[in-house]
Length: 260
Image 1 (cartoon, rainbow, N blue to C red):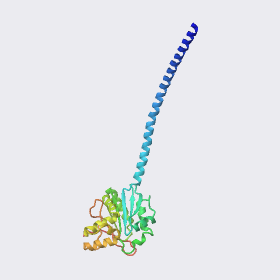
Image 2: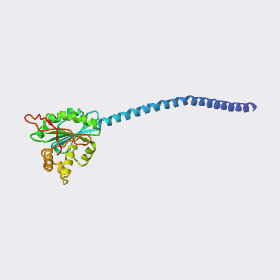
Image 3: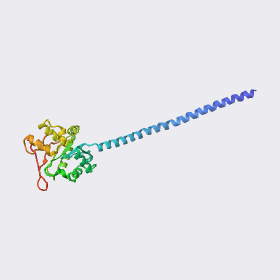
Image 4: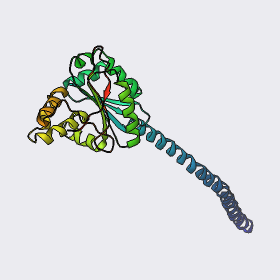
């Protein structure tokens, strides 16, 4: 009997020793695992941050590339706008009337350098019918950076040097925003402002269906002068030059307009 009691107590002590050893082992295992998990988290945080930075940089670069920082408005009867990014590439082409939409569909100039794109449009068969005889071609640069707009205007003037009745000027993006709110291209809206000063009854809807020649002739008639074309530099003051009428092969000399 006494031996049985001793054996029972021995089993209890054995179980307690086993439990104690088990607790020690578990504690050691937990202690050994804890630094590894913490180190893993420490390594994971900068890796995640790097991934986020790459994603943000990629999105920022994408957004920058496809956001126009300037607009080139081409207006005859077609009204067409080229959105130009800060890398001088055309990232959008939009027609602001039926003829403008047809011209946009006829020429593929997206992602070209803007000077190359403008030359291609002006030399295209789709644009040729609009430059016949005395058609007035208005090409305007609208941007928020005065120096950049001035550089672009010089390029635009070089591209149009061989075209009769091509009038080039620059203005700011505030005018562009107002133009789009009125449903007009930037160039046609600028002509609307000139005509509206002389005839306050004129509306943007009236201008929408008019060619640039019709607008210019009406401005000239109301101002009591000849064919006067106002040009703007980037700070909005009158100045700059425009291409006058040419003769023969259409290679006209540049003249400077005087304000009436």
